[in-house]
Image (cartoon, rainbow, N blue to C red; front, side, top):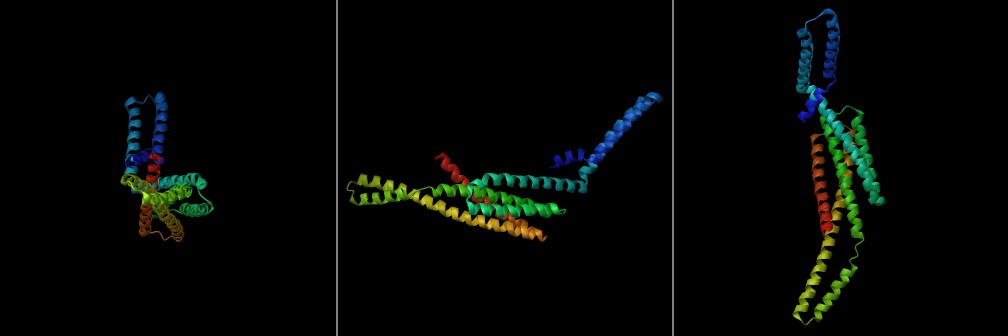
Length: 267
């Protein structure tokens, strides 16, 4: 961050303007010296003084509280614009995986997001409002990513037909009742255990998806609430803390789905 601040002070308009004026003055002085026979050592003092003045202004800008604040505002604005663009990109990638109900929810969240960004640009924002806007956009991004993974996995699970597995378990239990050979009985038990683990895993995943579905609704409602609070200028450190807490929870749910996806790909 300090390196970016220093580079920004190097190219600050005031500082560049002063350097440019000295360059013009030096060029004019060189032309004048050809007619007036001004000593070379005097001429060389002008660029040295110009560079020294420029570097002094750069250092002053770098240390200036006002300049630092303006720099941070610009960086935050750039971050907010990038996050807003990322939201639009993720929506385009996600909407094709949603059904009508979830697409409607997605549109509602994006509408709230657009209002939050609009309110940010409407008036000069302080650091707290900027941070809340930035984190609110991060929350929307987490919602979209979580929704995409949720819809993909829901569709996959919806296509899984467990009826053959259930029938196989019933048949093997009947075989087990009539099996006289201990080794045969042991083999049948192993097959039953494997099939029951499949059923158990599917039930566990469906339960996780139900929890994620509820979390998605919670995030959606939270974004809407934050939109209303921002519109009424009720930003607070408590609000920022709430967003960060929900972000962490959303990331945890997203990690669960990502891990499951990676395991399925490996298998």
